[in-house]
Amino acid sequence: MERPPFTIGIEEEYFVVDRHTRNLVDDLPESLHEKLGQPPIGETSPEFIRSQVEIGTPVAATMDEASEYLRTMRRFVSDVVSEHGMAIISASTHPFADWSIQRHTDKERYNLLEAALQGVVRRLLICGMHVHVGIDDEDLRIELMNQVTYFLPHLLAISGSSPFWHGEDTGLKSYRTAVFRSLPRTGLPNEFEGWTDYQQHVEVLVGTGVIEDASRLWWDIRPSTKYPTLEMRSTDICTRVDDAVTIASCYVALLAMLFRLRAENRRWRQYSRMLIQENIWRAQRYGVDQSLIDFGRGALVPMSELAEELIELVRQESDELGVAGYVENTRRIVAEGTSSDRQRVVFEAALAAGAERPEALRAVVDHLIEETVEGV
Image (cartoon, rainbow, N blue to C red):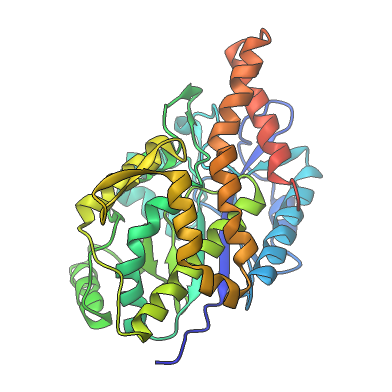
């Protein structure tokens, strides 16, 4: 089988905050929507909650291209909302916003979601990052999805950006994951025998009227319904754009490595979804601070060691795809911590300096505003 193109597209969702209050804006004025609808590249669109904006980069042939596209689009959205006294933050939860007073965007798709899912979708005050990788062959898309699932906890661990919820420290590095799991058809997908098997499962739900189409499958990884891609959706959105590019690079390199194994008539060993889900919980709870289970060794292994193993595992593909530098940035993330760690440092430092909790939480928002556009 010919090697897939492994093209890259990245989607990100941002919160829009009022620079004075640091809280989410109630709504975006129509004039702002009009400006946001004319990006220099890619696409922008409203999200379910009115205080969110989604961007999608153009299809990139290389990660260098994808990186430049992502930086351009973050800069564009930031500049446009700044003209209205607003700012964007790239984090998977807002430190203190109240989901119960948010309003959803008045579009047919979102109105149907609200009517069907009620309270669980109304509290969906979270942002994520989705990475699309081009794989034309449908059966190969399913085969690689089955295998790369093993590595989703590793990617989640280095992405955490949602420690706070409603002004409280949740103790988790990715509280977004907990919120998102309240929706149906989330989490890990089944292991499918191939594209036909996958389609047959989807047709049961569509044929009975439970879902309109496969876009209502909100798994951590799925075949895209819009593009010939395998879409990774398991991670928090990264506050630093460099970290987002690192995660996208790790993902595409892992897929390329798994394809090489296939060409050599080998494959990555499959483990039960129950075991992988345990690693997802550990990544969600601890981020890079502690360890994940190495199922082959039957032992807990620190993230620093797992990062080195991942870098070595995909070294050949990283060199071939030109992403080696981005993948090796995983070391820095593990050593320095993720956005969740930095948010907590800012919060605790503000409290230690005499700030009350509301003021300390606003300091976290200020930090996120600054770091979101760092390097763009």
